[in-house]
Length: 291
Image 1 (tube, rainbow, N blue to C red):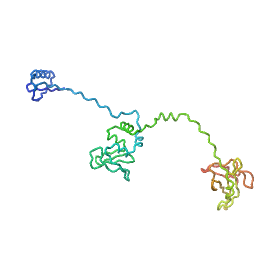
Image 2 (image 1 turned 90 degrees about the horizontal axis):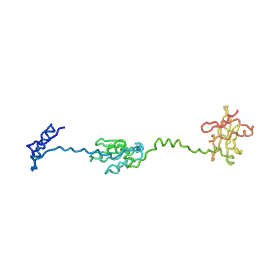
Image 3 (image 1 turned 90 degrees about the vertical axis):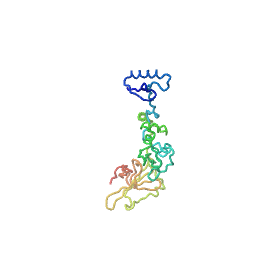
Image 4 (image 1 turned 180 degrees about the horizontal axis):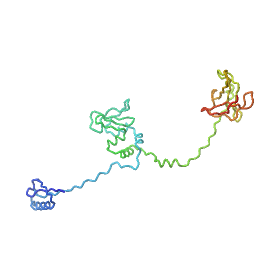
């Protein structure tokens, strides 16, 4: 390493001479010290080694686990974030495109107002310096000069954003035994009241009067639904379910299957020729009707 000392005989002039040999440097310094006794302008020049300062500790510690960026962006309102983080920020107003008005950029000296933020995503853009980002996390990284992990830690602490449950805890909760669900009572058709039976339609538009009618009853013998068979003028047969919904009669199948055994056709044999009665999703509720 090269060292520098004042040249003997020119003490006080500030002239430096290069001495590649360390022994010559020490000798010259000693001679200058003797000659300089009593003279404040003379003395030796000894290089001083200044220790470098230790690197400053990071102001934001890296947490073992922090909320995901999606969780942070969903938890922080963009306009409230920028109003808090940017000093002297104006009251932000959103335009028809979802962006704020222009105001001075906090990332450079800006007197014209060229900075705008998105109320929906938290994105920012400066038309002066060209700085831009897609979220409040990007702004924290640029404004506070943090990396992604530090920005996540800082924002979660500053705004109280909690971490999501870990997958291990979620799996453990999923494997916990759960109490068996109570057995549900099968849905049954409500019996049709007498006043509704008195007003039951006996014809179906152009089909006219039915050639046969099947009445479905509950365990107590009360009617709950009907199936009517019509003979078409051009030939063939058509079957129509008939139900009561509590307020009126409908030509459609009931929401739940009717009882297993209906009564026979009115005035006919006590057997079910089968009506092809179907539920809402086309499920067959009865056996096929015999011709």
